[in-house]
Length: 557
Image (cartoon, rainbow, N blue to C red; front, side, top):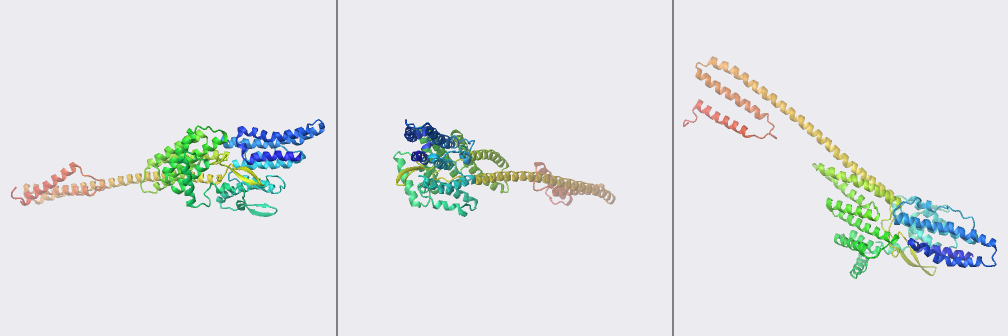
C-alpha cells in the first residue's frame, strides 16, 4: 500500500515538474489518466470480498480524504494562480506564500501519506513562485525555508530535482536583489550562508541560463546563431518565442538596426494575427506577452535614436491600445518615455530663452503619462507580472535524472524577475523630475513678470525725468527770452535791429529746446517719424537763411 501511495505522488510530482498542468483544460484528464489506474489497483485490493469494513473506513480516512482535501487542493490552488495572475492578469484574493498555507491539517500518517503530501505541497509552492517570481523578501524567505526543509528529506524520489529548481529560483532573485547593493544571508544549523552561492550549485536547471540567454557567448557565436535563425525564416519556419527574444535583443543591443527590428515586429504581428492557429489559455498568454515585449523594445530603441516627439507619442498610443486589447499593462514604455523627455525638457529649461508654450504642453503630457505609469506599475506589482514568458515547449527541457529521461518545465525560464522596489523608486524619481520642471517654469514665469514690472517702472521713471527736463528747458528758454528782449529793446537804437536780434535770439532758444528734446529721448527704442524729419529739415533751412540775411554768406541768393 505504501509503495502505491508513493507511485501516486510520484506521478503527481511529475505533472508539476514537467509542466503538464499549465494546460488547464486538460489538467484534470491528465491527473485521471495517471492516478486513476493506481487508485483502482489499490481499491481492488481494499474492497475485496475478504476486506473488513474497518479496513475500508481506515483507508478512506487515512488516504483518500487527505489526498483529495489536501494534495489535490494544493494543485487546484496552483492552477488558480496560473489562471488568475498569469493568464487573466488579475490579482488573486490570496497570493504568494499565503496561498499554500496548511489550511487542511493532516491527521493521519498511515501509508506514508503525510511525508508525500508535504513534499507535493512544497512542489506546488515552488511551481507557484516560478510563475509569480519577483524580487520580494517574503518570496525569497519562503523559498529558502522550503529549500532547508527539503534538505532534511531522505527518501522522496524527486528531492534532488526539486531542490535544484529551488536553488535556481533563489539564484535568480538574488541576482536582481543585488541591485540593492546589500549582502543577504540565511542561517542553517547555526551557520550563515550567502544567498549568492546558490547560483554555483544549480545542476539540472542550468541549461535555462546557457541555452537562451546572452551569457558567456562570443560575438562570433551570437552572429552564427542569428544567421541560423534568419535562414530558418527564409525557409518559412516560424520563430519560437525563445528565438524571438534572442533576435530582438540582438538587433536592439548589438546590431542597433531599426530596419531589422521593424521587420521582426512586422513578421511576428503577421504570425500573431494571421497564423491560422488559435491558441488559448497559457499558450495564448505567452504570445500576447511576446507581442508587447517586441513593441516595447522597438519603442525603447526609437527613444535611444531620437525619434521625433510626434512619432513617439503616436507609437505610445498604439502600445496602450495593444495593452488594453491583450490585458498586458506593462509599465515599461511609460517609464522609458518619461526618462527620455524629462531629461530633454530640463536641458531646454537650461537655455537662456525657451518656448514656454512648448514646455507647458509637455508638462501636460507628462502628467497624463505619469498617472498611467503608476496605474500600470500597481497592476504589474499586484499580479507579479513577468515581462516575457516562453511557451510550454520552449520552457521544457529533457534531462536524465536517476537514469530516467524526464522533461522539466520552468515557467520563468531564463528571464530575470523584476525588482519592484527599484521600479517604484524610479517612478518616484520621475515624479520629482516633473515637479522640478513645473517649479522651474513657475519660477521663470514669476521672474519674467517681475522683470516686465521693473522694466515698466524704469520706463515710467525715465519718461517722468525726460518730461521734467523738457519742462525746465522750456521754462529756461521763456525766462531767457523775456530777459533778453528787455535788454535788446533797451540797448538797441533802431526797431529794425531790435527785431533782427529778437528773431535770432528766439531761434537760438528753439534750437536749445530741440537739443534738450533730442538728449532726453530713449535712443534704444526711439524711431524718427516723417514729422520729426521735416521739422529738422525746416530748422536747418531756416538756420541757413538767417545766417545769409545776417552775414550775406550766399551773395547769389
